[in-house]
Image (cartoon, rainbow, N blue to C red; front, top):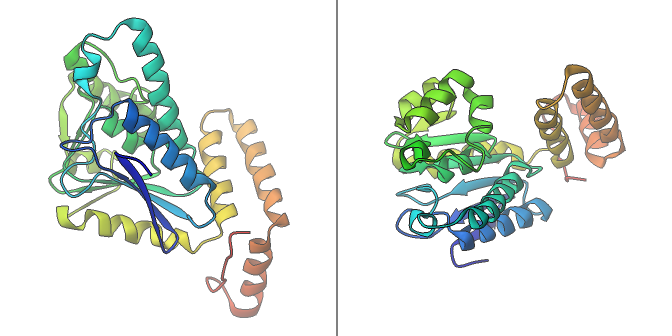
Length: 259
């Protein structure tokens, strides 16, 4: 698909693969290709779940500081919008998304992982928001998605200090969901999303949207979002197949087509 980002599809799982050595730094081209890959994965009926993967050595080391160091305000205002838009496309994917983290996920790299639904990290992985050490703050979701995930106090510690967290600490505070041997990160991510790839795609999309949108509104509005999404699924083939299978064969035996 691009020089730095590719979407590879197999068995219903789309892998968005970052490949810009040495650390997958997020320059303008990689950001644009990431956005394109996310949009392609979202629109493809063949893709039922998504893995974001930076390779065996590193997930993503953040933004390209060489490009940013002397950039003026107007340029960075536009560039930060492009970066946030790409992260929002990943976060808005209507399919289960897992970030498979090896090595470092720092700055924009961690913000990309935060845009996923789940995070699997290698034992030697390190994550953090080091922007404060450069005299700036996170600009692609770190001050917003991080506190929603781990709470404001822990997020402030990570952002204010700029320190790198080892995988074990990230797991303890809920920043990552699973820690596995480094060589097993991608396989663990596959195991995590494989169960969803065979699931009812429209119901999974509805569940994700109800949860994500509901977190940003009051309870009454969130319940209305849930009610509308729930009722709409009674117009799908998967609802018919799921309920008929339950009545005929018991739970957990339905075959879903994603329609």
